[in-house]
Amino acid sequence: MKVLLLGSGGREHALAWKIAQSSILDELFIAPGNAGTKKHGKNVDLSPTDFDAIKEFVISQQIDMVIVGPEEPLVNGIYDYFQADEQLKKVGIIGPSKFGAQLEGSKDFAKAFMARHAIPTAKYGTFTAETISQGIAFLQAMKGPYVLKADGLAAGKGVLILSDLEEAKYELKSMLLDEKFGAASSKVVIEQFLDGIELSVFVLTDGESFKLLPEAKDYKRIGEGDTGLNTGGMGAISPVPFADASFMDKVHNRIIVPTIKGLKTEKITYKGFVFFGLISVKGDPYVIEYNCRMGDPETEVVIPRLKSDILDLFEGVASNTLSERDIQFIDKSAATVMMVSGGYPGDYEKGKSIFGLNGIVDSIVFHAGTSADGPSVLTAGGRVLAVTSYGKNLEVALEKSYDSISKINFDGAYYRKDIGQDVL
Ligand code: AMP
Ligand code: GLY
Image 1 (tube, rainbow, N blue to C red):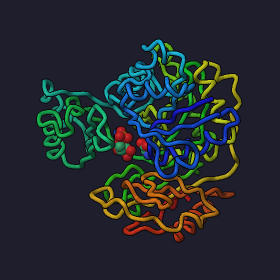
Image 2 (cartoon, helix red, strand yellow; image 1 turned 30 degrees about the vertical axis):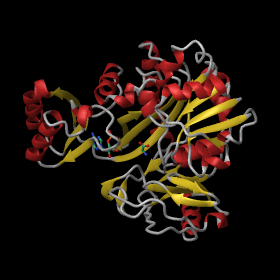
Image 3 (cartoon, protein in one colour; image 1 turned 135 degrees about the vertical axis):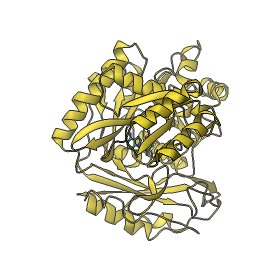
Image 4 (cartoon, helix red, strand yellow; image 1 turned 90 degrees about the horizontal axis):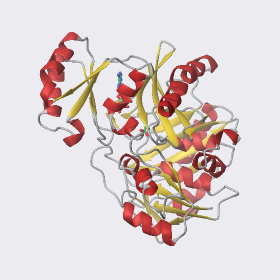
């Protein structure tokens, strides 16, 4: 099989690493990829959102399957673009339709979907510039903290959690009337605040059946003890100690099954990953958000724990035969710690030489934001490297990642030293 993987982060490096191990792979291309993906296939200089350029490449290279890493091409309708094209129709594409991708692309769509299928989530209301006075009244009638969410994609920045009512009203106005998040905040979802502990659960579905992947927990804030600004994610662990069999049963019965069934009964074409961002409130799971792709850095611990051939599973998705495929896991813990550029998630410099990568033996170093400069590897993003390790338990896995990190260096490197500590 000839495969094209879209994206350039740690998630895509982890997917490329796994795809490269498949017994049915002939050739792997990554667009645009990074200095790490290059070791597992051929990087091609294409933007994941330039569908015409992707089409040309897929046809000229006779690609059999396209795997979509990030959400943007999905929300923009890459699945539908392929279906509508005579030459591309037969190419397998791993990711939902544009309509299905609204589970991530529109918070209001996701909330209404959950309401229709009685999936547990925070109570909410959706407001626009026309209904702003109802929005203010909605805020006044509820207790803080106040959760305001831009309806559309806002690069992970569209959620505000405010303890003060006046501030919440001010922010609601700036989102709806002053386009604080551009068109993404022309609609705003206001939600009840849920107090609990978060985790990420993933399934792969062909729209009929699904396979549950290992769960993970990511660490979103820049500072230790989960303080400071939100980031794309500073590390992840899998398994999650509090996600025991009884909790995961609730997740299965109350959330996953009704979601997959809901997609099917509503005839929403969905062939790809569903990422359930969950919160456990006193042992009961609620959906905080859906994403239509894998998580990053969660992928860097989930995919290493997958034993089965990932292309066999993807083939099952593409041909609606996922239920006939076998899925097995590696019975080890995995942890990843992100090394980021100094200043991230604010301004940071790029182009710093990374030293020590060749000496790492106890970890897998997934590249998140790197570029190749001849034989050298340079920083090229805020999140630079995800250093993943296995262990017989999380403590051992984390110890190995921290030990490996101590051997890697670049100017301004920063990482959190407390990944996993809250649940160990
Ligand atoms: P989202 O983009 O919807 O995942 O929201 C970003 C982050 O805001 C989540 O990971 C949570 O930490 C937090 N959050 C979102 N919604 C709620 C809620 N209803 N209650 C508490 N925290 C929330
Ligand atoms: N790690 C969270 C996300 O990928 O959205």
